[in-house]
Length: 122
Image 1: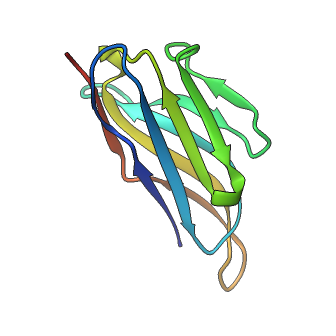
Image 2: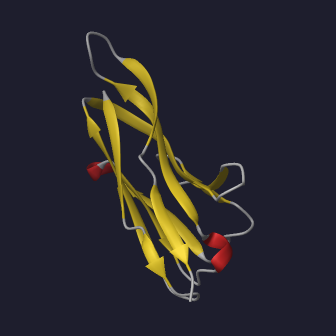
């Protein structure tokens, strides 16, 4: 199986920065798209940013110019650099990855990390 392990969340003041990391582990053949989603209390989960294996990106309008998604394919890791954080960024952030896993045969995977809490408050 494939597992995603997230780190980097925490409490930060408005205007501050955090960097989230998500590392994929397992008998991975390849990873395609990776992304970050977030869910605030009482709200639906929303896409924050997505990146393809080749480095093409897209962002939610609410985070453009403040957040940057990147990846290190050699480490099977995706990052989210969050700058100029606002209270409305407070949410649980989830990593997602899709790809191919080795087993008795090669098969598709679509997995999520455990979630990491980001709280922006003074």
